[in-house]
Length: 115
Image (cartoon, rainbow, N blue to C red; front, top):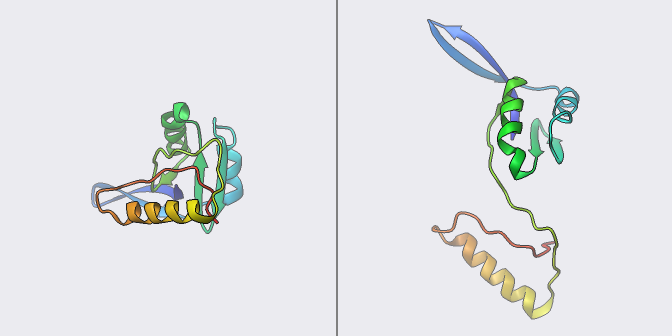
C-alpha cells in the first residue's frame, strides 16, 4: 500500500523522512507504466497489484518514484470462485470464523464467494 510521497530532509545531521499526500492522478499514470495488473486508489491510499514474479521489481520502482510504501505483501487470489448455500455455507462460515479467531492462524485463503 502506498500512503504518500516520501520526503527526505536533514535534521541535526540525521536524515529524516516525512510522508506527504500524493496526487492520485499522477500516481496512477506513473504506476501504469510498471508491470502491474491493477491499481486501486481510495481515501489517500493506493493498492497496487502485480504478479508474484514482478513483485520485487515493482516495489523497487515505486520507491524510486519517491512514494512511501506502508505495506507490501504477497497475497493469493483465487482464479475461480465458488458459491455455497444452505448447509454447505453454514459449515464453511463456522470453520472460517473459527480459523480467524485462532491466534495461531495468520491468514486464511479460500475461493468461496462471500457476500
